[in-house]
Length: 346
Image (cartoon, rainbow, N blue to C red; front, side, top):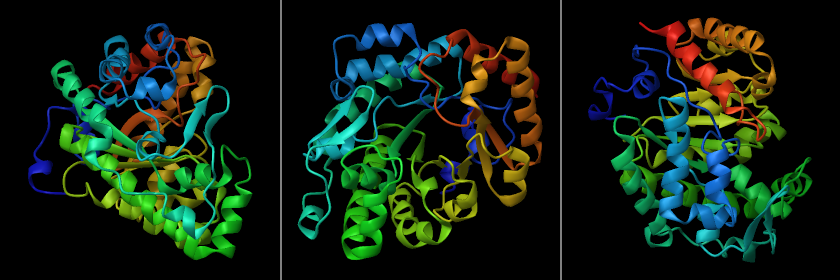
């Protein structure tokens, strides 16, 4: 990162990202922009997910809702991992209750050529939405995000969500040149999507690799690591980068090799264990999203336990160990935010 980026920040979130001592442990939640909020459901009424993601005023409103309600230390840009591939013309729909569904799956050399580069002109609504947010967020930093090449590729190859990723793994082994062709083009698309968000005003980025945990470490290093590294490289000198995967306890060390400054830890690994394995990394996480459904005393005890486990880390950003569940009571998340802020005030 550049010297300019290392200047101490008034933002606890940005300070923590850089390994500095923030005024309190910063907190934000994955999938905090919407899902469980009644104001989100009201704002989204009558729109599809992709329509919502391409409407600047709606994107800005939904991104702001959890900031207003919870007082979190960072906003996560409201979008979806398939937005950039939809923007280049891939026929993908987000089916409620299912997830992304691709009309014509990608499995051949000819399919690789269907993945053209992303141009800023394809996503002018992103730049416009971030411009609107800049006026409202004030000192609260905006996190840009993208889906990682492997997770996007798995949707393209499988044609939709998959439990075993069988077609994806088979393509990796049988036609590695096709796999690397798809993944390298997706890395360029993801990288440009992140760069566009940063150029527009995002102060940090997160790369989500939802399904990388389905791979062995050997396969991750061979088939995924180079492409995730490439996706993050385009913003390496400008903003802090967070990398998060689900069920990736066996991949923690490998995933840090992407160069991301912050390692997102899911709820399956205690933070003190992660800190021992990654002594030079700022950690993000990792309250189990389901614990938010427990009673207040249990929830606060679990929140305190996460803070305690993080004490050995180089730095800590409090988050859930995955996304906010749709039926979450917003009052519970507010309780967590207030507890973290009060317990860690310096």
